[in-house]
Length: 95
Image (cartoon, rainbow, N blue to C red; front, side, top):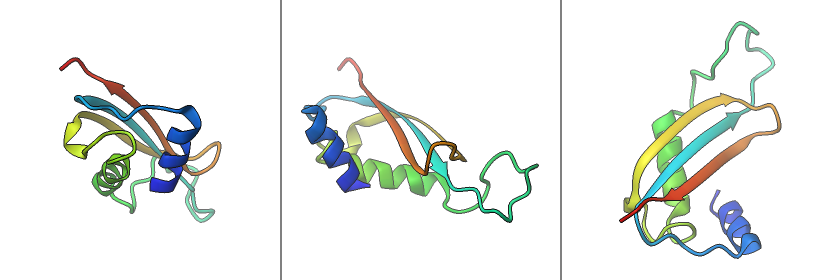
């Protein structure tokens, strides 16, 4: 995850956020073929809180100076439709 974030930041020539930030995360997981079509949400591992922690760690030094700057998080897990990964929106908040 860290390498993907660093690559995206370099490509967009983005600056590291220095103030408080709000983060919106959507984790897109592969739906196993054995999973019933009735199952609408991925209620199995990995745990959402562990995914959030991993994203925060990956953002440190690439998007934010330190993950303690993250003061607001909205996160969810869903089945992937365009490929597995994480969609991340980071917005700097007024200090």
